[in-house]
Length: 209
View 1 (cartoon, one colour):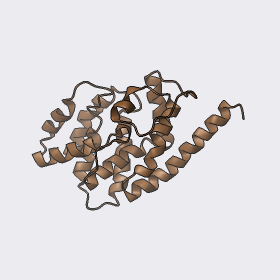
View 2 (tube, rainbow, N blue to C red):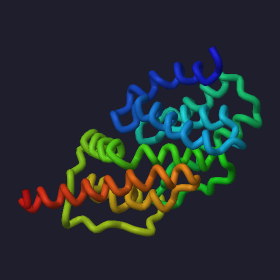
View 3 (tube, one colour):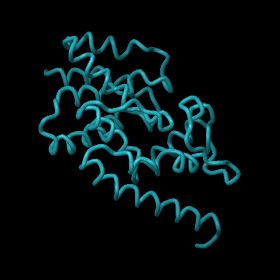
């Protein structure tokens, strides 16, 4: 068993305690996205990308107070100190943070960030948004809710907005934040699908069947 396979085994049971928006299937989809981007980025370190994908949500504060998951797994994998620091830097750059994400300094960080964001777009992104909203008891939509822009990370995380509001505060912004050429290409179609969905949802809400 190589260390990617070992890492998969170690993280799967953790992720499957999370709701459907951040479970192990999410990780597997991000893996596929990352591999599609890696195919066009031959200079990237594949092991760093793969391990960062597998570990990027394992200590997510939305789901766990155990900050040690990431460290314990990296210890078990016996990565070098250089690899550990690189993986941790990639993971730190993944989160959106209300538009205040950490800069992506390496091609590996750009790949993992794009791969994760692709899973927030398109049909899967729609499904994940409403799965997360349902798990957190959020409204489907709220016409009285003001869309917040140019937020601090604290402001972004401070309010449980309706699921449709989340499209405007984050999801519709992601297409223009992609870093790799492949990520930009894949994001375009997914973005357009989400726009069609929101348009159709509005038609049905307005009784224009």
